[in-house]
Length: 246
Image (cartoon, rainbow, N blue to C red):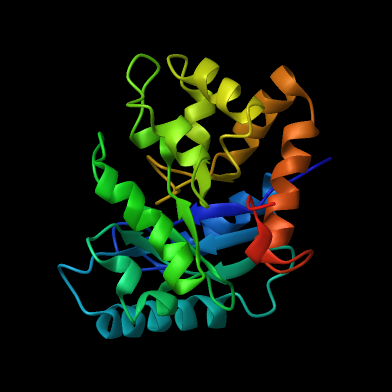
């Protein structure tokens, strides 16, 4: 059965509004494993207006070290990757520190966008991240910025840019948005999935339910396509510079 990477999670303990403890982080990873998820990318929030990248990285690295020490010897947990959920800011394409916030060792960066609609300057800034820095922008939780009756043309405009789009599992699970999520996935306007899990109470890992919904509507083909994107951008197969540029 095809599985996917959880590209958007807040499993690191005590760094943002995600997991509150090492114990909760381990429980979240165990639940991911039970759902067949083999790799989880931890993406704590980074806001350039509130802290320096150096401060953020010190906190993130401490939280990561605590979690990795706690899971040493634990069998069956997903492989843990680390990055950041970087809130969009003007001029980020020219920022010297942007490469520090990528998924570690890779050339892709998860970007949380401001509330829609977006100006043309915002789209140009996204394109410039690829052009100037050689990084692949991944638009976080596309479902946050659009709704079935009001998309602001975002899916179409993003399809014209050298970016990838990540959707949360909830997009496929909410009755009001499930149809739109399936249509976008079928049209190759969604490339990666994430749970955006924060805890073990109100925002738990839930990718399995989304994958079940996708299989019911479209079969395994879209999930296999998502896996191809994952292999490319995570460096397991192909050249990540060519993602969506061929």
